[in-house]
Length: 241
Image (tube, rainbow, N blue to C red):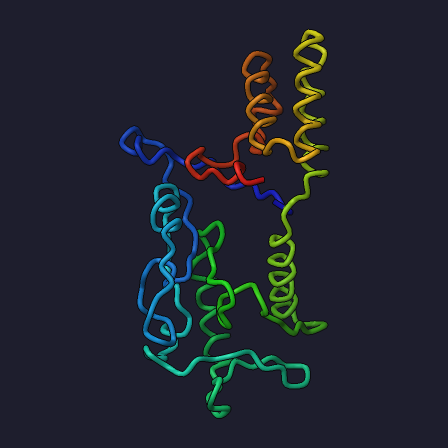
């Protein structure tokens, strides 16, 4: 990831009865859970979210358009820049302007959902997507500065870490126990990291080997980090990096 966020470790859903912490609570676009709230009366149910992710996260579904009173089906909306401002207007009827209701709803939900740790958003949505969304921040208003900050943060989060950056982290972690390895194990670890750099193996391979060595040579500092185990294995995200 471009930015590593220190979320609490996720609990094991199969051992909730043992008193493990509650799942991480995140906001999510209602349509991704199968709610028929899109402008055409349909949904965008995401099997990965409703299946695998639902075992580890507690969802707080949100649909801004329905919440402000727009029905389903309804006229689609789009973002329109007018001078220094960005308005949310009907795609076919320019008189339909829901900018202020959406802003008011956004402020209300920002206060109501203070306990969430992130969002899963519908791509391309004019009200909750991160793609093709623009914002206009004021120069003095703290609320406008906060809105601009969120836009910039979301832009940063869209940029995944490059292999070169992962290699730097892997080499840094190797330094914590390199002196404790024999020559053969050290050479193997260096070779695996280089193979990842060349694109010959996925990131999960050097990560698995590092975890193996850290079990044999524990480090209190590394044990407090999340890089080597940011999510349950079932999510399989690092199999693709």
